[in-house]
Image (tube, rainbow, N blue to C red; front, top):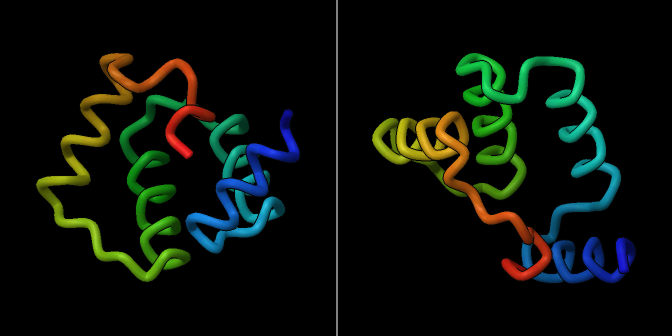
Length: 78
């Protein structure tokens, strides 16, 4: 199951499993709801994917994470 999830993510986003795991470790080391940590992760993902995230969208993402309004089943997103 886990490898198939990573394969679907990599196919859709072109982000390698190792990169995802490195970002996950960074989140685990820090407070996953800390605004600075979230901004850093968003910026890294933006650079990795080559997609710009506006400040407004960044703020919405952070607010959703801090208020626990994110999908429970991430594998259904991919």
